[in-house]
Image 1 (cartoon, rainbow, N blue to C red):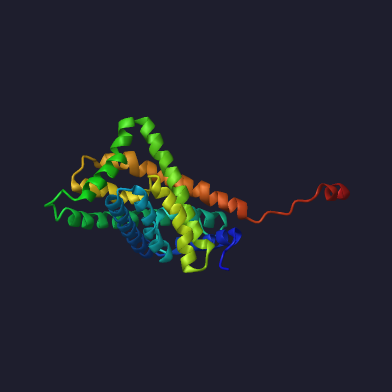
Image 2: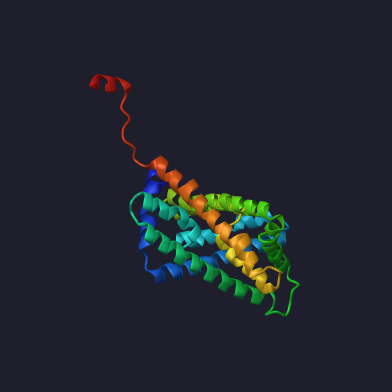
Length: 274
């Protein structure tokens, strides 16, 4: 049996988080660029499946392939690190400056990789700007506008909604990263991590790195989304929400329930001692 118990899982995550924090900047950046591109691939594959079948749930079932590539290759996805590195810090295996260094370079690398893939995909899908009739063009535009202009339309209420959807998203994304440690077998890792990622994508929650592809791609195609719309009404609040849920709902919670606790003395023993 290759099932790994929760205490061992969190200990392994702490070690992995410490190793991530110690990586050279060049390694963090390249691994993060690859992650951004691979997640873009997974997103367009999911959109293709949704368009071909007319069922978004089919795309959600397929989408986790990107996370499988990223986690099995031990690449850098900043949203997963939002849980793993805080666990390493709480277990005293890394420092705040090293953690923040990883977050910063991983975020930048994810952004570069996502935009790079978006540029290549837009060249393909528009036949280098000569066609706008592909079904995925309208899909990308509709999704991107729903992730920005719709929240903007609702104002403060929209900001609350996008933030809550970001919380809900990265709770499951970080659980996907955690579940990869619950098995020592490759097929077990794939099956375990697939479930939480499917849950988040199937419900249309807000993931910072997915949005680094979808929104710029729509902007390149020509939708009426400005740079300010992208960052103010999505990227910034989504990144903050992703961090909070990864850190607190997954990182802190799992650290707390699996850390070693001092034995509790019985009442009788306490009375005899006194």
